Amino acid sequence: MRPSFVLKLLSTVLALAVFVPGLTFGPADAQVIKRKLPKAGFQPLMRTGTPGVGYSSNQGPSQMVSGSSQGMHLVPGLDRGNRASAGDWYDPGEPDLKMQWVRWEPRKMPLRVWISPGLQLPSLAFQELKATRVDTVAQMCFQGNNPNPFASLTQVTGWNDEMGEAVAAGIEMWKPLEQEGLFSYDFTPNPREANILVFFNDNFAGATEPGGISTGGYTCAQAIPYAKIAEALKEGKNPRTPPVVMELSLGVNSTLEKLKAATAHEFGHALGIKAHSPYRDDIMHENRVVEQLSQADKNTIRRLYKSRTQWVL
Ligand SMILES: [Zn+2]
Picture 1 (cartoon, rainbow, N blue to C red):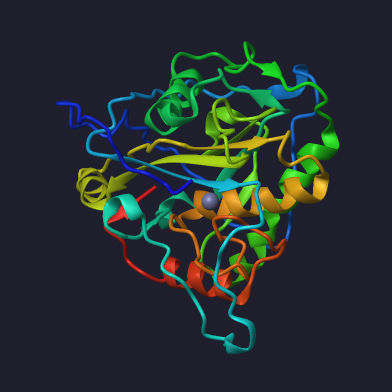
Picture 2 (cartoon, rainbow, N blue to C red; picture 1 turned 60 degrees about the horizontal axis):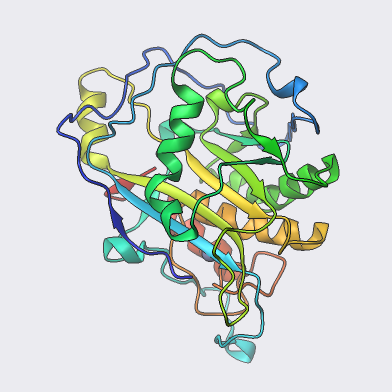
């Protein structure tokens, strides 16, 4: 499914969010991979308490953007074949924003990624996900001071820790790019400090169509005009922006290998590659067939993170 555009009605409240002064992150560490994945089961979800971080769902101007990947492979697509060159890249722009580019701000680095222990968000008709998912998760996660904000969610049947490790490995496929200073990220055991949260399901509700195509993953985000962020920063505020929500189907991604590759694709969306590559050689092809990042995938994220964008995550 192509990402599609949903205009989020703008709140009259222009405040981007509750501002959190003094919210700072440690330095990026490109070498040490810290995995603190929550184990199967619920007890270890929160090991450390964090002060309540306020959050408002009134985000000001923003656009709901999303990306998804299909589980079906026998589909049309271009092959570079012998025409591949070291400089290949594709346009990562958001189709629903007239292909404008979207990326995380440098001040957010390192991004914090929380992989839930197989938790399933409330089932929702597939076409409604992009309109509500980010707000739903943000409200659960950031409102109040609940140390275990997802305690009410159920775990997908059959979940095990190996699946969490496969997802982490898929996310880490983008990590070599950190060494180029483009972006950085690590894992957190605390969903309340996460920029990117990963959930699971058996299958996406309503995603199975008569043609037999099922969705393997879906990533929802809200892009915000950088002008609004810059304004708040100028006033000495530290605006908190909405998280990105990834969901992965354990039904479609029925092996650890499939789960890892599907995760790598969705994390490409989470980093800001919104459009799909037209080439089957790339992990960001809509109907991904490869299991590694291509040269074009790497070139594309490089271009994106070396650019100034008007829209940010
Ligand atoms: Zn996709």
